[in-house]
Length: 67
Ligand SMILES: [Zn+2]
Image (cartoon, rainbow, N blue to C red; front, side):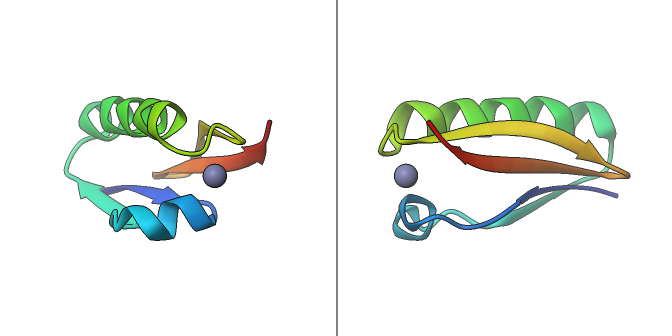
């Protein structure tokens, strides 16, 4: 099992109503979803936060940084 999860939930994320963890059976699916998810948030959120993907064991963690 591979999880894509948020490092922390910023205000924009909480308001979005998105789930904070998504689980996949294989790493390729998790990787492509993590990339698309981070891109979606970068495009649709406040633009003050920057989302990126890092690997942590079997997890892909979406990090949140201030621009
Ligand atoms: Zn934000």
